[in-house]
Image 1 (cartoon, rainbow, N blue to C red):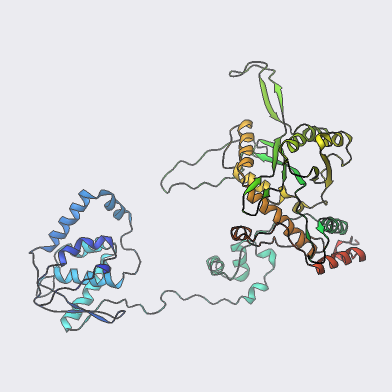
Image 2: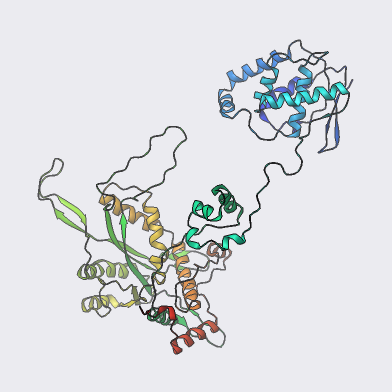
Length: 524
């Protein structure tokens, strides 16, 4: 008689380790072979004699002991779905046949009551699967042939994918391809098939944003502005952008107390959903901030010498309560947001907060000739504002204002990436009042990584190259060069080079004054 050959690495399921000690020392008086075609090996002979009178009671006792000693493991097992559709591994099928053969009784191979159910629970499968496998094994033993435990499934199984002619998609107008159900209705197929086409990569989802409308004059001014940022070529170097270390970008933005809709991830059981309420969702509490940033100073070793953060300042005012409330006496100082930001308010903010912050935070070895770039909003002060220019020349500084091209948010660092990042961080704090909102915005500004700010300045140069390619337009895809990867490799450039052919084409466009017919007014 031979012993049962069981390799330790075959027991890949922790739920069947309980049977290992039971099958180690079995006596053999009859032989059956189990065949696995995946390895083309004969796994030896299987003993069908019993060393105990009721092996099933032994299994049940082990299960009871596990329940007493490992309640957490048994609780996890009960939470798993019994009769799952996963395919049983070949080694697990071989072990199940060994268990059933050992526990069966001669001559008709009858199993003790509850055996199939117990083994199905041990292997986390359906009892019908165990019964079907056992019937196949009994038939093989009665016919005296090798027991085949391999799966009967061959190659690819399941429903075959439906073939769809992708050329039909071109006939569907883009206006009817805004939702999955709308596109499915236009194509005459089910929406589930459209979803599978998305998952397979045959079609892709695209979120489209509205961009500012540009006239021919806007495009010409955008090209002129970009050409002014380029260092002329030399004998050894091709044209490239300046370092921009003496430029400060400023802009304003409203920051809100909360989103109108907020996504949460809750537990599957009945967790209480968050409750949020306002008097009117169209008038959620908000504060306008003005931010100022410059390009960070980072050496070749990646060390941040100066973070480039000038500051972010809220438009608020202090007033004194006129009436007494339960928790507030008359005359208590209160803070409120300035909802109407005029030119005088902006001038006062620049003179009293922005300019002092620039002078106090500017690097000692930095150039004192500084340009403040702003957009063309109507409340902004003029570039020749007398009060501002007098204040800008103090302490040896020569600070001047310059306007970016009109309708060009892609020409400002704050609109290009900083404001969206700050807003995303600020929404995680869930402020309850005005003071909490101001603190959340300031914390988001302080925690913003200087290297990410430097990446935005490089993205600014990439966008200007794309604008030149688009002849001053804004119909271009946001370019990506893998800035973080280049930074890790020490290959991130500080200045991007521009092909001379692109500059010549832009100058030719300006010289000829080519006008797009689509920009001309149409006759009624």
